[in-house]
Image (cartoon, rainbow, N blue to C red; front, top):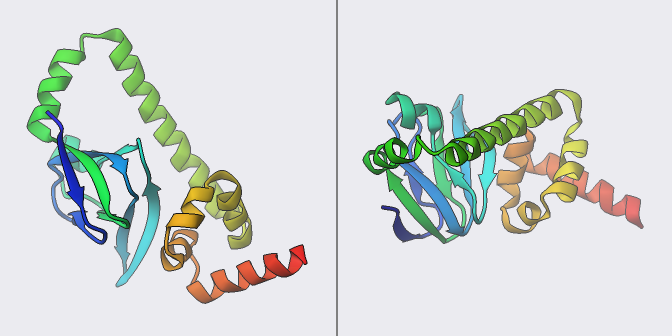
Length: 171
C-alpha cells in the first residue's frame, strides 16, 4: 500500500494551507517542516531516516494544514495515501498491540513538542544549539545553517556568533 518514491532536494510534499491526503515514512534523506511567519519561513521540525510524518490534524480531520513539508536532501520516501491509511486502520484497530504502538508513537511525539516548547521558553539560543549538538548531531552535520538558525529562532549571523564563541571557548 505504501508507494516508494525518490524525491529530489527542495521538493514540497505538502503546502501550508492545503489539506493533507498523504503521510510519509523516510527511508533515506531529511525533511523539514516549516510555516510562513509574517513573510518569513520558520522551521520547527526536522525528520530523518526511519521517521514518519504527516500534517496529522489535516490528514485526520480534512482541514487545511498549518505547515509545509519539504525535502532538504534527495530523499527516498514511502507515501501512504489517506484511503489506504483508512483501510489499514479499520483492519488493525482491532489489534491491541498495534493500537498500543500507535498510542506510544503519539505520546512520544507529544513529549517531543512539549520539550521543544519548554526549551524555547527556558533556554537561550546558545543553550538550544548546544542541546542540538548533544542530542541531534546528525542535524548539525546534514542541515544547512540557515534552516538551523530558523529552527533556533535566530538569524544566521547570530548562529555564526554562537558557533565562533563556542570555538573560542574550546581553544
